[in-house]
Length: 205
Image (cartoon, rainbow, N blue to C red; front, side, top):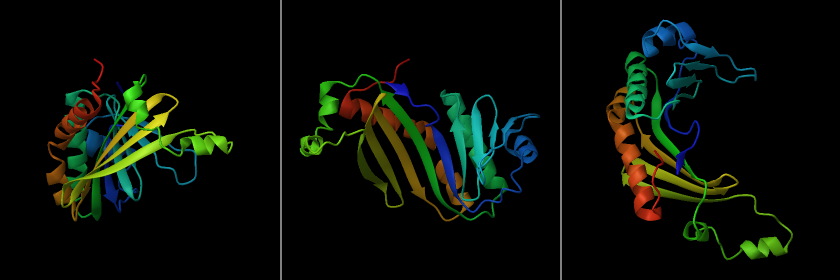
């Protein structure tokens, strides 16, 4: 099992001021680096992308996302620190949700795994001339009253995909920052343990 590209991320949902989060401001206050890579979007209204060698920040009006370009524990902790810094500095921003995401792909799923997608009505669709391009199984698992794990399993051309979304309802930047601290490493372990216990899958070295 491998990590899905651009799938490990932190998403802070709220009403963000994109005019404050400029490349220069992000480099100085969030990344704390003299220079960062800046990619300006071509599409109308599409957000820019700010990147260091390890983390990409994508600010938009309704969310700010931090995508991991490296998947080491050190990078997980760094992404967490950047997100907490943003929440601390722009502490008057209305924030309503926090998401921590991990994605994986099993390129060669065994028969037991594929049997999960053998729904009774598959043959009926095929007999009617339809081709089933992909199938998803979505589960919402409650962790605590204000948090949940949304697990999506998808049969795709590349194999079998597993997407974990740890979702937290929040009422303030402080609450989001307090919840986020330590969550990336602990949630990664939850995801890996679940994959091993339920599907006998391990992450390749």
